[in-house]
Image (cartoon, rainbow, N blue to C red; front, side, top):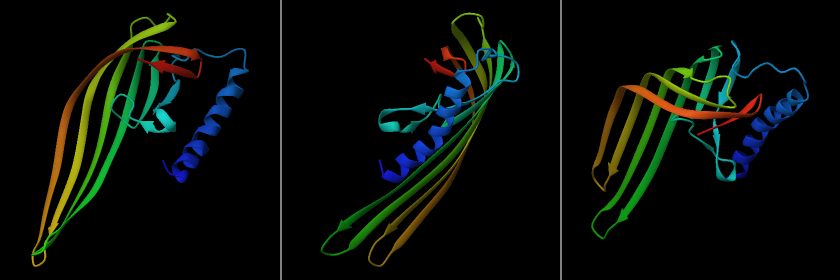
Length: 172
């Protein structure tokens, strides 16, 4: 990982951790599932890389009550690759660019909000958009292919959530 990405992650996460520590010193904290409570959800993996959380890069959750919440997730994927094929007769270079953007909106339900480990399930729609561009460049010929992709999906999930602090939880 580049130094710039690491510095960016540290810059983003430092205020969040500082806010969490300051919040942990408050003796009267509301329930993390209380009506109106909000959460920004993401996954941190090896070497402080951000990975998808339940299929999305970032997820925003807002509780409507102790046992119901709405969650919106956004996902962005990009890929660019080039290949060079030197040959005696022709020079050929291929490039491929893929960009996709997805959004999902789900309703979450907690079956046991008073338990320490909370079981939840959710459902809702998802929408995806994609763009692909391939270029094949030979000595005297250049071929460009473009395609756009659209998709609608139904989403369903289930899991458990454990709040080890009122402002931080682990999911499985």
